[in-house]
Image: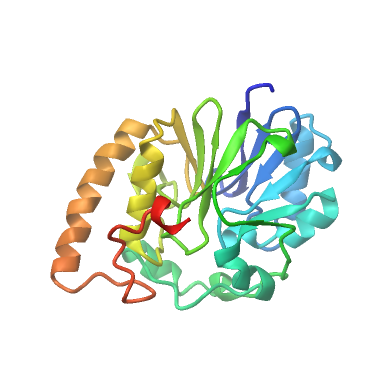
Length: 261
């Protein structure tokens, strides 16, 4: 099988919100942007010389409105099946994100006031329900879907044969991509320590680049250094009883991807 090429598809701004086109023996799309983005993604796929009708699969990294918002419409336009993790099935089926959002810092608190984050997307029923590590070989891509819970319970990433990690919201560029190349938390996490455990497990696979939902590709070594600092910061917050998770029982400790498959 041919090596997989990863092409960013900007959905909002230059890289504030990204989808991705994966090119192998057949093309695959990862993420579907905000509601109303389907035609923009469709046209950008075509601009890269790919017939959108050839798309083999649409993978949704998690149940947030800026990642699955146009999945149902994009499925109609391309005819491709949609894959999502079973733990985020409720947002997909209802079109509503689990609320309240849990901000990771000032950016999240500011964005939480944006009414566009609280709209209802068109519901969808995933054709492929992901429960654990899943090969994409049957869809023409030399890559694997990896469950990476923490940002949401059903967050997932895709790692290619050449080490490109399409990481969803495991990590982001600072200020929603306004400071490219600088690792940071995305605006929200359901379980910050759980997400960090997932990120560390993906870094242990030695990816060559991290392609994220918000911003440009990140250097793994720079992300590792950031993750070490973030671990210390979260440990301090947890010790003070100031670490917020959606479920107070979720501390993130010993709950990385391997233990939750």
